[in-house]
Length: 276
Image 1 (cartoon, rainbow, N blue to C red):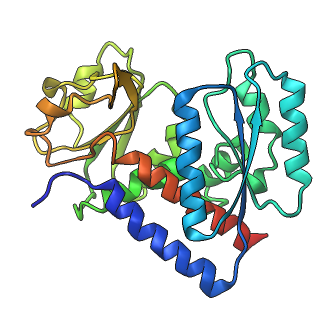
Image 2 (cartoon, rainbow, N blue to C red):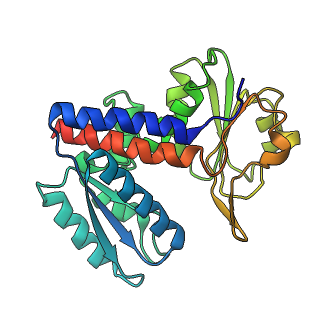
């Protein structure tokens, strides 16, 4: 049994299904991405999203803004895209330059075009079961866990994250399958104990090698959301080389959560196009 959860292979399968759906339903999904500044990782992620869109048949539009763009300039672009009837989906590439108010800019998006599902209205609607539109990051993580084929009922999950609101949708998806889920800040004094009791451990704290072997339960499912630069290498939050032997299933970095997040972006773009 292969314990590596291959995000690339799963994402490829999903992309093929999306491509077929677009063709079958004669859809014309259109995604606009706002990219502000010079962050190399953000530019790389946007280029990957662009390539994926072109592969499946989603129209892709880039709005590149300078690092020193004012909040007013960014909000003007958001407003323009909100009103553009040719655009079904909007993505604001994060993180934004530090002088910009991320919450204010996300809030300015039309929730009906928010492809990431990060708008507070969309998160609240999903958590309160008023909507079946799942934020792409949460859906990607859940599908990776689901792909293991494990029975999730009565298991415990710990999500290590600095942002509670972004990971509440993951917790809800797991709770719906009978998983008891806790979101823990990486600075929590009991962090090691909370991780060790988890049958499913999800790390999204953005700290290289933060999760060590002694923090992982034997035969746990380990999902590494982190992407950190160490020299020339991209590594996760999990010390993969030592945790690998202990985990029953584990995602690599790169090649795990990243490709699935892009696939779910396409999935949500098609969903928005179908609704509009």
